[in-house]
Image (cartoon, rainbow, N blue to C red; front, side, top):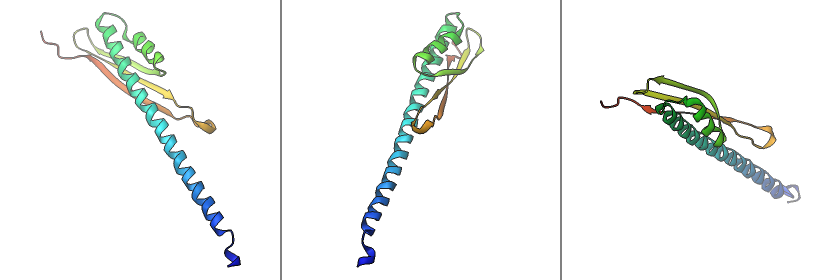
Length: 120
């Protein structure tokens, strides 16, 4: 009986450490998933803003960058295919997620908006 003294404390410490590790990984995954959702939404809004600007005869990329910045992401790429009647504005955004211990994953998203196949 004397040789097992303290074994329960050691086992409890190991269980607590494993549970803390699992919780940490869960929090990390949740934070990155939320950042990805935010990047997806910002990409959608930026593409829509760019498409509206292009339809009004303006350069779509400054409008897309303005909306992206106001949503905490940066535009990696902005491009337009087509003319004023049939076009697609594609915007790719990215956001760096700052976590503990200097870990900074980057999430990216791409969205398209425009007017295709307009009825005449």
